[in-house]
Length: 264
Image 1: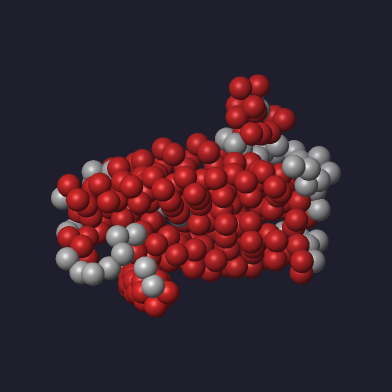
Image 2: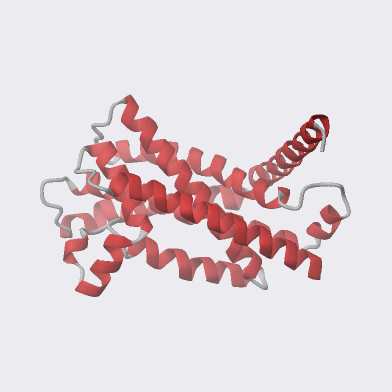
């Protein structure tokens, strides 16, 4: 294959990704319900734990609002990424994929469009949540370098969760089903973690799971960078888990998408 041919293929691949990403972004802007749930649901969790449960939870050496914030931030991203699953299932069920397959475009463009849009949406949500956290008393100690690292880890985690969510969208048989699947998968791994309470307070089995699952490493890395708690191994483990989930989920999602759309 000539160099010119490779350049042309790469150009059209990027063009397909850009068009489908724009399509997903426009859909979000026109879907007010989805935009409101993206913004207000995590703020509701923040207020609930800050003012209702916060006084009953002990976090020695750290004000609870500072301890809580990293957990709320990562939970916001985890739940926000599930919109990829809903978008993928909706496109398949409404026959939009059939139309796309009749066009000369990359098979993975639809999935890339949804996951990149999730990345944009979660970036906006992260900024809004940081502002909300400052309003309710969150007081970070991070410098510019630490904030850049925090955003880098969060965006890598977002992309990984979005591709994992794409798999859930591909295996679901209905819109109602995908909402149930994402809830069953994402809810336990966000709550059985160090997001809301110290893992030392959990029973042994739950504690072992909570301390070794990927979300806890992401939370602890963000917590260490933003308020100065010990980083230990959480930084590189958060990156390693996110890269592993991203690569494996991408491979599985593209395989399932090709098989599913061929069978339609």
